[in-house]
Length: 243
Image (cartoon, rainbow, N blue to C red; front, side, top):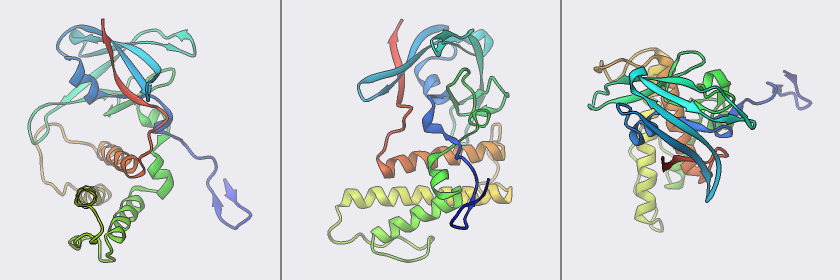
């Protein structure tokens, strides 16, 4: 770290991004493989039609988790257990989380390496966070960009204007829905910064501030990917053929 020739403060090399590594989603795995029934299933990552990586997931209901089987740098890794944690959202149903096998932290996604671990353990950041510096700046920048595209320069909490006469209705609705989600993110970020729950108490295990921040970052990353139409290097995760 230090000062650059332009007089700007250089923070040193950027962190690796979540899109640089394989991502294993607790929700996606739980939706595909019944956590209550023993099973053995291949799990693959693809980029277009090309398979770029695969592992095998062994569901272990009696141990409340799954066991991961894979090679790393062409060497077999000793299979290890990743446990579930289950919460009940306020709208009902069940939500599955991973307990990071490296630190025990509850998280929605694990990222591949020699061990699948949480974003904190791999010291990862989101591409959108690198671009904007932090969530606040990214959210407000994207909201202002949408308003400008609609021909408006009003405040962020003002109602959206009607779309320009040349804009297709589907495009307008897509931007309006994204703007509404960004407003929710803005209020959620405010709640995290203030350490309060703006939505009131909800049943089930509450999210910690770190987990709420991760959920906001994850949503922000998806919105950023949609707005840029750019797939991540890690490819698309999906189950392989049933054994």
